[in-house]
Image (cartoon, rainbow, N blue to C red; front, side, top):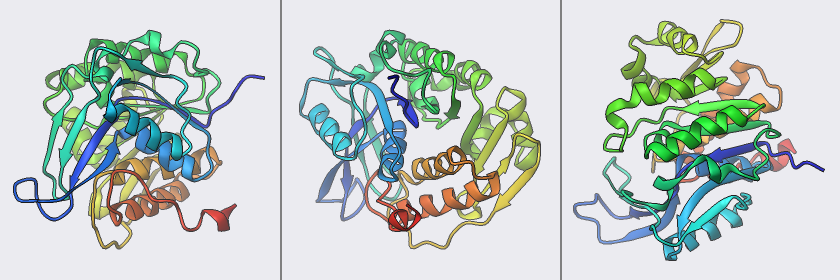
Length: 300
């Protein structure tokens, strides 16, 4: 019987050392966790009972083993994660106030290629996810991102997730163009999408849709989120009140909440509300991944 995953995602995950008691400049204590946009979304969905798989490369090192252990414990399928004997796992050093440094040049994930997708049941997946981070890691990861979308027959989801300093960050629009042309849903920050297309609100969403996506979701931080649905209707929802502790990973939790709802058949406005609540829970929690949803058992 063919295996069917709710979500298959492709991308890099790094060992993340997070400052506990201050900024990167003055903290004395750091907590080890893991961070990667695609795997964060897999974790959040797996904690809600979905079947998820993550495709990537990790180094044959302690950081890679820690990542594998954490993702496996969260219920993410890792059968298509390859161990690279020659390249290291990436490292991220950050605080909870926006300070971040990456050591990912020459990482195992920067050598991803379409061949890393071989054997994975991508065509049968209900949804696939890749972000602009993967597309801008290097030419091989970019080819792999395009190949993932070409193979997929379910919902194809893109989060542009722009990051300065990557191999392709200076050519973000050019590298994202083939991904956007192949996707069904764009999930992205309004500010970063504006750097690619210009404008804001419905006009911005319509420009994104014209690039290929039929459904465009804009996250707006303290102003909530909005979406252009496949029928061309515009929806806005306010942000949830939160006591923010660590904003990193909130966007990935938002994405997971939105996908969970849409895959369950929820309408776009309802999906926005679930996504905003999921992002808020993540922002109130220390670490890179969404905490378990306390209402999951009640929802069944």
